[in-house]
Length: 149
Image (cartoon, rainbow, N blue to C red):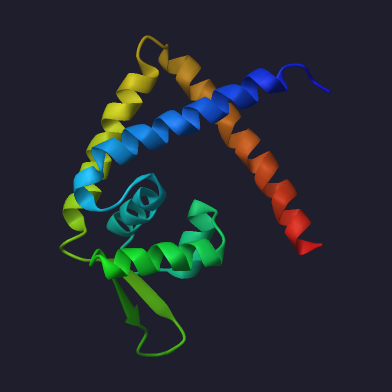
Protein backbone atom coordinates (compact mmCIF):
# COMPACT_ATOMS: atom_id res chain seq x y z
CA UNK A 1 0.00 0.00 0.00
CA UNK A 2 1.16 3.50 -0.78
CA UNK A 3 1.71 5.38 2.48
CA UNK A 4 0.81 8.69 0.82
CA UNK A 5 -2.87 7.87 0.43
CA UNK A 6 -3.98 8.35 4.06
CA UNK A 7 -2.86 12.00 3.92
CA UNK A 8 -4.33 12.60 0.44
CA UNK A 9 -7.60 10.92 1.44
CA UNK A 10 -7.75 12.94 4.66
CA UNK A 11 -7.13 16.19 2.75
CA UNK A 12 -9.84 15.36 0.19
CA UNK A 13 -12.29 14.47 2.95
CA UNK A 14 -11.61 17.66 4.90
CA UNK A 15 -11.80 19.77 1.73
CA UNK A 16 -15.15 18.16 0.84
CA UNK A 17 -16.61 18.88 4.29
CA UNK A 18 -15.33 22.47 4.35
CA UNK A 19 -16.71 23.17 0.87
CA UNK A 20 -20.10 21.77 1.86
CA UNK A 21 -20.16 23.95 4.98
CA UNK A 22 -19.12 27.06 3.04
CA UNK A 23 -21.70 26.56 0.30
CA UNK A 24 -24.52 25.52 2.63
CA UNK A 25 -23.97 28.61 4.77
CA UNK A 26 -23.80 30.96 1.79
CA UNK A 27 -26.85 29.44 0.08
CA UNK A 28 -29.08 29.26 3.17
CA UNK A 29 -31.39 31.98 1.85
CA UNK A 30 -32.05 30.06 -1.38
CA UNK A 31 -33.53 26.75 -0.10
CA UNK A 32 -30.63 24.82 -1.64
CA UNK A 33 -27.19 23.76 -0.56
CA UNK A 34 -24.06 22.05 -1.72
CA UNK A 35 -25.91 19.10 -3.23
CA UNK A 36 -28.13 21.14 -5.53
CA UNK A 37 -25.87 24.02 -6.52
CA UNK A 38 -24.14 22.11 -9.34
CA UNK A 39 -27.47 21.47 -11.06
CA UNK A 40 -28.75 25.03 -10.69
CA UNK A 41 -25.54 26.42 -12.15
CA UNK A 42 -25.53 23.89 -15.00
CA UNK A 43 -29.07 24.84 -16.05
CA UNK A 44 -28.21 28.52 -15.79
CA UNK A 45 -25.31 27.97 -18.18
CA UNK A 46 -27.10 25.36 -20.37
CA UNK A 47 -30.83 26.18 -20.63
CA UNK A 48 -32.86 23.32 -22.05
CA UNK A 49 -30.33 20.65 -21.13
CA UNK A 50 -31.47 17.06 -21.12
CA UNK A 51 -31.14 14.79 -18.13
CA UNK A 52 -28.59 12.70 -20.03
CA UNK A 53 -26.41 15.76 -20.67
CA UNK A 54 -26.42 16.55 -16.97
CA UNK A 55 -25.65 12.95 -15.98
CA UNK A 56 -22.62 12.96 -18.26
CA UNK A 57 -21.32 16.38 -17.27
CA UNK A 58 -21.88 16.23 -13.52
CA UNK A 59 -21.12 12.49 -13.44
CA UNK A 60 -23.99 11.50 -11.27
CA UNK A 61 -26.36 8.56 -11.57
CA UNK A 62 -29.85 9.04 -13.01
CA UNK A 63 -31.53 8.32 -9.67
CA UNK A 64 -29.66 11.13 -7.95
CA UNK A 65 -30.39 13.51 -10.82
CA UNK A 66 -34.09 12.64 -10.66
CA UNK A 67 -34.19 13.25 -6.90
CA UNK A 68 -32.44 16.63 -7.18
CA UNK A 69 -34.62 17.73 -10.12
CA UNK A 70 -37.72 16.79 -8.14
CA UNK A 71 -36.62 19.01 -5.23
CA UNK A 72 -35.65 21.89 -7.53
CA UNK A 73 -38.99 21.61 -9.32
CA UNK A 74 -40.89 21.57 -6.01
CA UNK A 75 -39.22 24.78 -4.82
CA UNK A 76 -39.88 26.40 -8.20
CA UNK A 77 -36.30 26.61 -9.50
CA UNK A 78 -36.65 24.21 -12.43
CA UNK A 79 -39.24 23.70 -15.13
CA UNK A 80 -39.42 20.44 -17.08
CA UNK A 81 -40.59 20.78 -20.69
CA UNK A 82 -41.46 17.78 -22.85
CA UNK A 83 -40.22 17.75 -26.42
CA UNK A 84 -42.88 18.36 -29.04
CA UNK A 85 -41.20 15.84 -31.37
CA UNK A 86 -40.47 13.07 -28.88
CA UNK A 87 -42.68 13.02 -25.77
CA UNK A 88 -40.15 10.80 -23.99
CA UNK A 89 -37.56 13.56 -24.17
CA UNK A 90 -37.57 16.25 -21.47
CA UNK A 91 -35.68 19.52 -21.37
CA UNK A 92 -34.79 21.26 -18.13
CA UNK A 93 -34.88 25.01 -17.62
CA UNK A 94 -34.07 27.26 -14.70
CA UNK A 95 -37.06 29.43 -13.79
CA UNK A 96 -36.99 33.13 -12.96
CA UNK A 97 -37.09 32.15 -9.30
CA UNK A 98 -33.93 30.06 -9.76
CA UNK A 99 -31.87 32.75 -11.52
CA UNK A 100 -30.91 34.70 -8.34
CA UNK A 101 -29.69 31.45 -6.78
CA UNK A 102 -27.57 30.74 -9.87
CA UNK A 103 -26.07 34.22 -9.74
CA UNK A 104 -25.30 33.78 -6.04
CA UNK A 105 -23.66 30.43 -6.80
CA UNK A 106 -21.38 32.15 -9.32
CA UNK A 107 -20.38 34.70 -6.66
CA UNK A 108 -19.74 31.96 -4.11
CA UNK A 109 -17.57 30.07 -6.61
CA UNK A 110 -15.47 33.16 -7.20
CA UNK A 111 -15.09 33.94 -3.50
CA UNK A 112 -14.30 30.35 -2.60
CA UNK A 113 -11.75 30.05 -5.41
CA UNK A 114 -10.00 33.22 -4.22
CA UNK A 115 -9.84 31.89 -0.66
CA UNK A 116 -8.73 28.44 -1.82
CA UNK A 117 -5.97 29.74 -4.08
CA UNK A 118 -4.64 32.58 -1.91
CA UNK A 119 -0.85 32.67 -1.81
CA UNK A 120 -0.48 29.87 -4.38
CA UNK A 121 1.26 30.41 -7.69
CA UNK A 122 -1.02 30.21 -10.76
CA UNK A 123 1.20 27.51 -12.28
CA UNK A 124 0.81 25.40 -9.13
CA UNK A 125 -2.96 25.86 -9.22
CA UNK A 126 -3.07 24.81 -12.87
CA UNK A 127 -0.97 21.70 -12.21
CA UNK A 128 -3.10 20.79 -9.19
CA UNK A 129 -6.28 21.11 -11.27
CA UNK A 130 -4.80 18.89 -13.99
CA UNK A 131 -3.71 16.28 -11.46
CA UNK A 132 -7.10 16.27 -9.73
CA UNK A 133 -8.88 15.95 -13.10
CA UNK A 134 -6.76 12.89 -13.88
CA UNK A 135 -7.38 11.38 -10.43
CA UNK A 136 -11.12 11.96 -10.87
CA UNK A 137 -11.04 10.34 -14.32
CA UNK A 138 -9.09 7.34 -12.97
CA UNK A 139 -11.69 6.71 -10.30
CA UNK A 140 -14.63 7.40 -12.63
CA UNK A 141 -13.37 4.91 -15.22
CA UNK A 142 -12.85 2.24 -12.55
CA UNK A 143 -16.34 2.75 -11.16
CA UNK A 144 -17.86 2.95 -14.65
CA UNK A 145 -16.29 -0.37 -15.65
CA UNK A 146 -17.38 -1.92 -12.38
CA UNK A 147 -21.01 -0.98 -12.99
CA UNK A 148 -20.85 -2.40 -16.52
CA UNK A 149 -19.64 -5.82 -15.34
